[in-house]
Image (cartoon, rainbow, N blue to C red; front, side, top):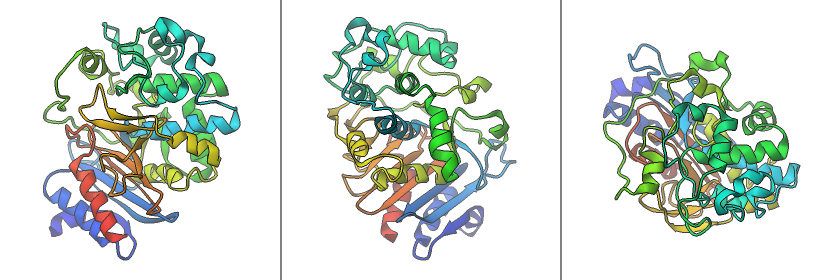
Length: 372
């Protein structure tokens, strides 16, 4: 244990030592390569810990400033940006996507509302037919191809997780309404003024800070496979190549956010603050209004969808079912509990096959709540 503890650096406020012990134990058990966990309570940082290595060769330390790809943990951050357009540009989440993006009406998708699309109800979780995977790295062309898709179920009738296409839909709505991209708005209006180290569309000068990621030992368990799940996750063209240098530059608000655990906690703290100075009360309420609760057609469990963020019906984000959060491929997550006044972020570069509720994250969040 002493050797593992020496890997852990950073800060815990008095009374939160249990969180450091938990992260140390995870390293001691061989569950981590490099990882960081951070938490904010009442606007104050109470935990900011990191340790391990940023590369597979274990030659580069995982530091305070290491950036990690958080995959779908990005979605609830992108959702804040989309929701902010209610205040800045009069965006109506109940309006059809086609009202701002006419091409999206193809094949009967004309009635899909913005809120439904952000709650994974548009019926286009992926490309059922082969595409060149390089299409994902051309935002405009990929968005146009998604708009032209025929839905795989009646839109609005159910949710089916859109692992990557969600980001192009959200990004295109934002760009058409605001005249700036989602990543630019996040950087210029939210992150830069607050000193938050999170990026959707990573500038090249930050590449040296990015940690390498390891793949899980097996594919996730999706349950019985059908065409919908296959299109979402299980084809050779279902996702962009994360090894391409272009992957970091292209804005994919569903999948390629890069940041620190502290940055994730800072952004999810906007949910704790019920919008804070980023969203008006009305815009926040529309963001977190429940849009769907029930079995998902892609992920093998029931989900509580809001307009881009998850309700905590599965208790992945602490003991309060009214908390909010989102998880990312491999194990990362961000969470927000307005009642406990706490937000947190967990990032790591050793992937597990868990789709949501990674045991490492659950253990850290549990330790945090023991300290509250």
